[in-house]
Amino acid sequence: MSANLTWLGHSAVRLTLPDGRVILIDPWLSGNPSCPSREKQQARCDLLILTHGHADHVGDAEALIRKFDPPVVANYDLCCALQKTIGVGRYQGMNTGGTQRVAGVTVRMTRAYHSSALDAPQGLMYAGMPNGVIVEAPGVASVYHAGDTDVFSDMALIARMWSPKIACLPIGDLFTMGAQGAALAAEMLQPAAILPIHYRTFPVLAGSAEEFRRALPATLRDRVVTLEPGTAVAWTAEGLG
Image 1 (cartoon, helix red, strand yellow):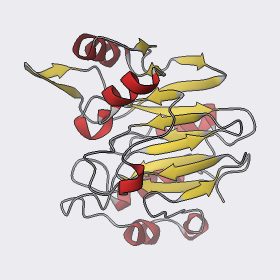
Image 2 (spheres, one colour):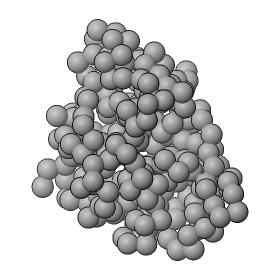
Image 3 (cartoon, rainbow, N blue to C red):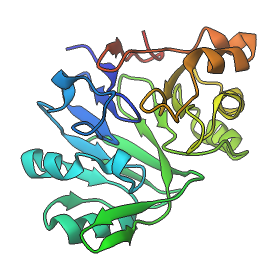
Image 4 (cartoon, rainbow, N blue to C red):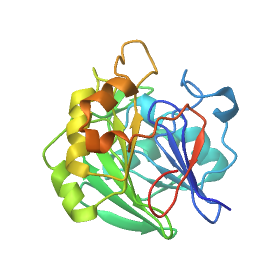
């Protein structure tokens, strides 16, 4: 079986490992207007990773937890909040700077500059700090999902310490960095492949892939991989494609 990466719209990303196991990151699907109807329900979830507590990232986590019972990796406070609100699940909380190995997959948690809260019946619930994550698995390139964030200078440290080969970067502006900020992030990270995310979902997310591409140095422009939601691209040891 071939490993692949699928952008499911907004910030939702599916990573299919060489052995067929599926990792879902920030699975906002059923309520996501940019997620294709055929992808609203997932056939498999072996590991669930959440960058922060907002509804457009936690999304379908409860449904996936109840259906597949995957290990759930998120920051400790978000794991506690989910345990309290859902009542079931196998949570493996961690925090910024931490690393853990789950079912043969290494997850590293980085910082992000944003906010984080979980929708609950009693109102918004504290969900810890927002994060980015780096996913490493045998035979495929490492993936950095930046979560929701502005650009920050410590992205240079992420590059120096972990050298992720694939960077999933929000570009939509308003709630995250826009084209210029994401271009600076890409310059610091120097990944082999760059996947724009968190754009085109709503009109207020005005950033575009072409604007982002134009903001990049010429040496990085051909590394941008633009996907239609629901389209898979090969995930190799070198990157994407």
